[in-house]
Structure formats: structure tokens, C-alpha cells
Image (cartoon, rainbow, N blue to C red; front, side):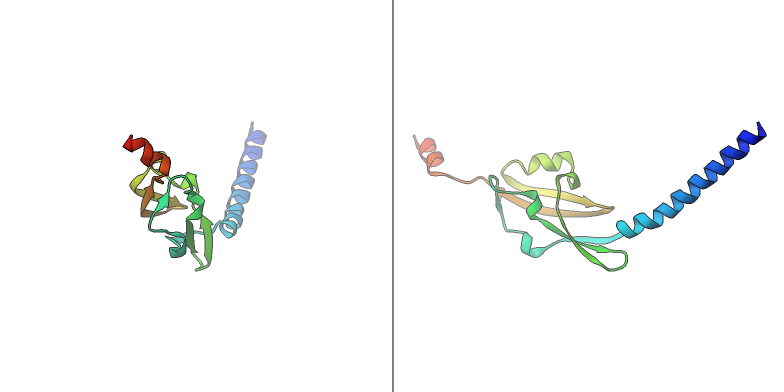
Length: 123
């Protein structure tokens, strides 16, 4: 019984040691984020629903050690409700979440008016 306890304590100690040393490695790969902001040049006054791609919006990410990274906005950064919003025309307020930081952005998505739609509505 004592022998198995020693082995268990030793294994647990190794696991904790390697786990903590792994945190330093992860910190280098994914350093803590200080702030996020949308790049102005990727933000349009409005977007058409048929050609809007969320990834066209870019985040400037400032890390703990003041390095800058540019990241595409991805669907996982939005709540399911916000993902549904951007599939429809309208004025929407969306919340972008990235590695502990939050950014709120107003987005206008327009329906493209075609000649067919105009003719259909007038008949």
C-alpha cells in the first residue's frame, strides 16, 4: 500500500511539474492579450449581404509584450445570436470576443436591390 502511494505521489508530482512547464510554452505561443481593435481599413460604412464575409474584418491584437498581430474575425468570436444577425439586412450591434477581450461594433448590412426586385414589387 505504501509503495503504491509513493508511486502515485511521484506520478502526480511529475504531472504537475510538466504541466506547469507547459504553461510557459503555451504563453510563448499564445501570449496574453492586452487589447483588440478593428483595423479601420477593413471596416466599411455598410456591407451587402450577398458578398459580406466576416473574415474581411481584421482585428489588431496587442499582446502582453506589446507585439501586434493581425487576426481575421471568425464566426467563433461571435455569439450564436450575433451570427444570426449578420445573415440578415439591417443595422446590427455585434460583440467580438477574442482571448479574453471584448469589442462591440455596429455593422450595417444592406440587401442589394436588383432590377428584378424593383419590377417584381411594382407589378
